[in-house]
Image 1 (cartoon, one colour):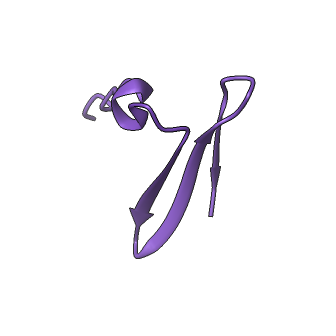
Image 2: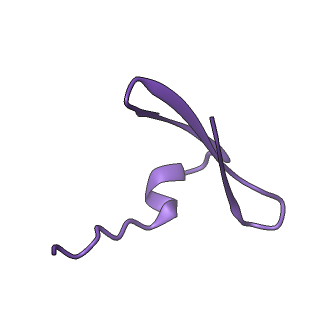
Image 3: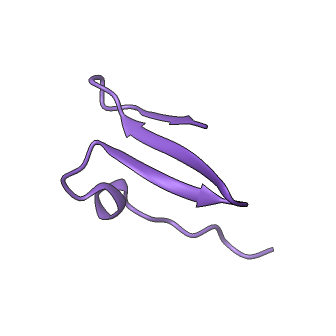
Length: 42
């Protein structure tokens, strides 16, 4: 089994607090909360 890819969230978000991810033709929203946690919604 291959090791999982490790990506720093700062690389993905840059200066944003919300990003959109497309997976299987569905759009997901990944956001950073005020408590600096991540929430993924559809």
